[in-house]
Length: 347
Image (cartoon, rainbow, N blue to C red; front, side, top):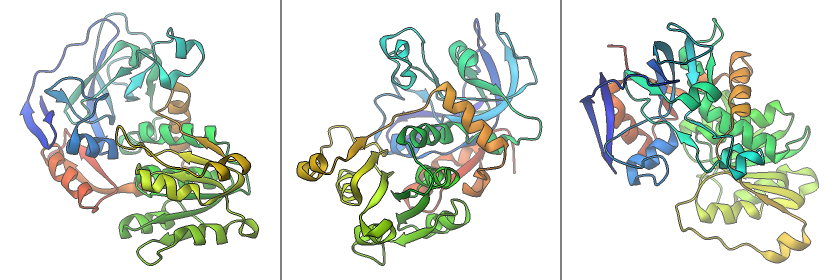
C-alpha cells in the first residue's frame, strides 16, 4: 500500500509499505477519510515523545473507513462494516483505570498510521474504541470523532453551565470545537484569535456570541471582562493555544470563583507564573484535561451523527495522500483549519 512514513522532524516520506496482516482480535481498515491535526503538525515540526516511539512510523491518527480484513477472535464486526476507530484504548487494569481515569492509563494503546491506504487496528482498540457508523453518516464527518472526543471530555469536565460566560483564546480546530460545544451547553461564548480563516469559522461554525480579532486589540483581557456579567470577569476561561504566556494571560480574564482550563499543551519543560493572591483569595479553580476516553468517543459520534456539530465546516480542502507534507506546510503558514486526506482516491 501507499503510506506516509514518519522518519523525524520535517522528514515524512510517501512510500510503498506492506499492509500488516491482522493478528488475534485485530482488523484491517481501508482508510476512506483522514484528517490533519494540530498534534500532527507539532510532531512534524519537532517530534513527539509519546505518539512516536520509534522510526520509521506510521503518521496520522484521525480516520474512518471500511473493514477490509478481520483477524481471529474478532466479535461484533465483519468485513464491509463502516467504522471509526479512536487512536487509543485504555487497558482497564492499571491504577488509573481502576480509578476510572481512563485517559491517564499507564498502558494506553496508541495508534498512528491514518495517512495510508490501510491501517491495522490493534485488538484493544477494536474491542473498546471502534464504532460502527450510522448508515447516513459520511466517512468525512466520522473522521472528526477523535478530536471532538477530546473537546467533549474537556467541556464536560469543566462543568460548563447554561448562561455562563465562557472565553476561549486560540481558535484552531480544537478551540473552535470547544466554542461550539460550549454554545450547545447553553453558555455565552467569546473567542479571541488572529487568523482570518479561523475568525470566520468562529462565526459560521461555532456560532459564538462575540469574536475578538487580536490583530486589532492590544488588550483582549479588557474585552473578555466587558463581555462578562457586571464586568467581573469570565465564569470560565479556556486556553487552547499551548503557550505559557497565553496561560498567564488568560488567568487574568477569569472572575473570583471562576474556572481556568489550561487545555492547550505547552512544550515539555515549560513553566508559568501566576498571581497566587488572586488564585487563593479569589477562590479560582485551575484545571487541565488530557485526551479522551471511550465514553467521550461515543458522545462525539452522537454529536456528529445528530447534526448538532457540523464538523464538515472545518475542512479547508481535500487532498490526496501524497500531499500530506504540503498540508503540514500550509498549517504552519496559518492557511488551513483541517485538511481532508483521501488515501484511496485519485483526483
